[in-house]
Image (tube, rainbow, N blue to C red; front, side, top):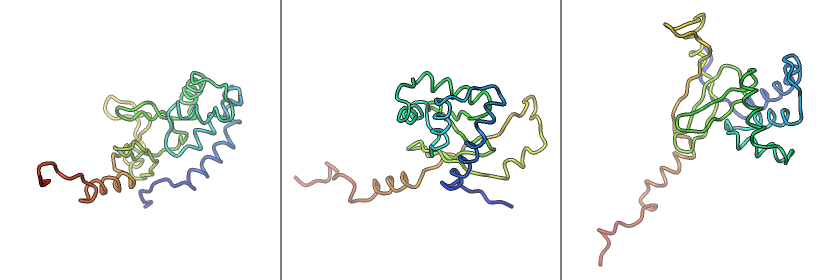
Length: 175
């Protein structure tokens, strides 16, 4: 049995190289023009480690293409979602964020800093294997979201709880 594991930087990089290598052929097959803007958007999306928002992708794209508008980036991202080149990950009370990893996987979310990381949980896919529906629902895909506290936020929380980090209480300070 494969273990539950976070997708690390090397795993993301290997996946990104593979996806970029196939991207042009898939676009041409679907009749989508391969423009510099579309290439820049998919590159920014795949290079990101944290499921970026439209604004974050636009900022990355503008480093190479300063005249690309936010509306253009948004349209490209929505088109990518429609044709299966990206997925929208809209977390509770958050703006839409995008994921260039279209293979089955799940997400672990830091509830404090909103960092999102891909996680592989092979058993989840096995739970629904062979099913096309659940009751009246036709199954399309499955994605589990795990709420957690990342290492940086755990450390910050620990520092906040240490006595040296607290301010003196006004009621206990001698006059």
